[in-house]
Length: 207
Image 1 (cartoon, rainbow, N blue to C red):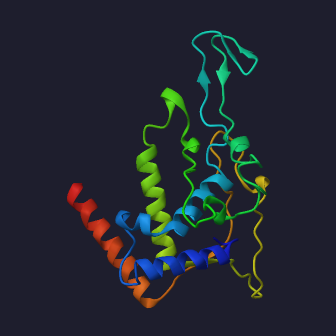
Image 2: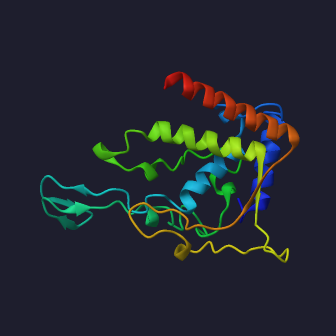
């Protein structure tokens, strides 16, 4: 969101309209927040956490689209290439949540679940991960403004969003960077503190 203030603002306006400003979003709000959903999908597509997913292995010789794959071969699903298919995702390096909408304004069926793998080794926690990531994004957007940090002279600190700014491994994530995260209002700050207190109390009760 540091790099995409326009998209951040649009998602916040949708949350304000649907949820209001006196509570955090919940799972029941998800179907009523299509732009937040599209933004969430674009976050996952734009810089996938598992660019190659985890390896599979063939249990017998196989032929796929004319390619011979011997028994025991390691096979990686190239999620990076899938998420950059220009037929499906024109201008793939651009961050555009709108790409997940049909012409009539409804969401496409593409929910980017390919990011969680395929076949028998698909991530068993994908539904939990999907829900938690969406709720985290919606809650942060509802209560915080995320923007570029400023240096000692008051100048904005620019951020590199290229692939070199991310870790290079099976799991990929951004390298450390500076940004500014501030509550959107005093009410948002109160809601955040209350939510944190509830979580801490629940944890104390469990341990």
